[in-house]
Image 1 (cartoon, helix red, strand yellow):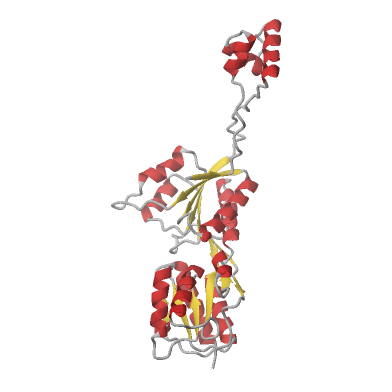
Image 2: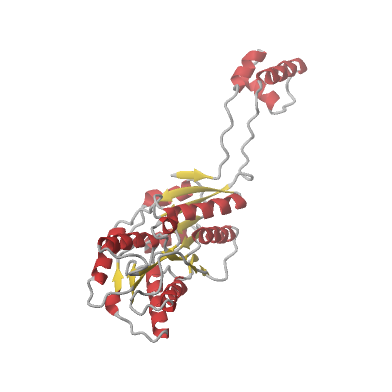
Length: 348
């Protein structure tokens, strides 16, 4: 568990017991002086005050629950990816602006026999969390019910599946992103465009494929089922699906890959076959993670604003914590194409 947003602890100094010993009084008497109590003799007050000054005692601020930052939870899919890093940056800045502390957890325990995993859920109430952000999470019906029963506000950031009616979520314009990526390849002159998709059951992957197909239809091109391969957002699977596409009787001249991470596997498969990007085949990714810039050649990709999505979700959560229900349960932030060196007109 990582906690952000709290100031660093002050350097250690003399304790009140040390001050009391120096002044020749009891610890309760020294405490009365520190706290401005009146029931202390003037001479005793003088000795304690001089000891406080001489020893450099720093009075710790008294905890005030009304002034303490509110605490929220952020549950991310994992902490070992640049995707999570972008989400954390967005939440951290927005939480700082809102005066919030954030507890970060990686992963969400699965339910057992239809019941929510009590350990993690109960911690929300034990530590007094005022709300929760879920990123790339897939909650069970019982977990949704638990949150509603305990009246804990929550917002989904890029939910894996369509959340139940009334659940507030923030995501990217995935359908439009699929259209944009495909239209870019069409404008370059490609007509044999395949897609390396994510999981069949994920909301974002389905929307990106739908956008891809819509762009092909608008261009008067037939949908070719053999050109759609699912790789579950895994690098190794993307490598295998690319090999399958290259082995088709009529292989594609361009690939729309539904995540930058999968694009790394695509690059590996193309290198194995001795194919050059973009001379022999063009590649477009999705996300605009740092890996897209580091790839060789740098990857043309569709940028989804991950940090902005996370910050928007936190601001919505703050409104819900204050009793204000958003008018719309779904907020979509726009995507845009970032052109780099991995796309070009098809070769001869």
